[in-house]
Image (cartoon, rainbow, N blue to C red):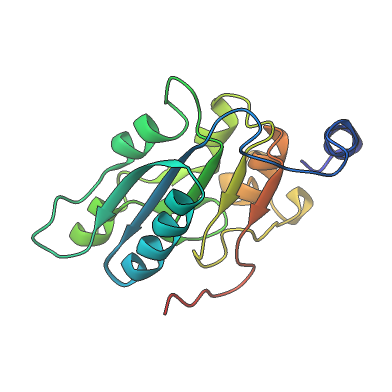
Length: 178
């Protein structure tokens, strides 16, 4: 978050683990998402995680004829899982407060988005790590830039911090998935 209390909470979490965010400390599970031009990167992340002993849940839609994973499937594999994975590589199209699952990308529909508000309503993400190549996924816009309650100013960076996420690696501007 953007409050003093949220910043103190992040610092306390850092001190409690002595600055080490080790997603393997409690388990070795991960979720990796991708589609079309993001798939080769997803393949590489999955292979690397599996080589390090992670059990990976993969949501992949490489071709137009493949099943196109939905927000509901992402929810089931990530925030709605019986145990939230320790590491999430959530590769999809983003802006600072919304992300587009494969089904929306394939259909051109913005009706079924993954949002920062879903993160806010979800479980604790303490000691979790999120990474993505999604454009603007880590862009933090100050709340004071917009009217109170405008979802565009409650971004993923703020939502993940509010939920205690240990590490977020994402793009502030445009990403490149090659």
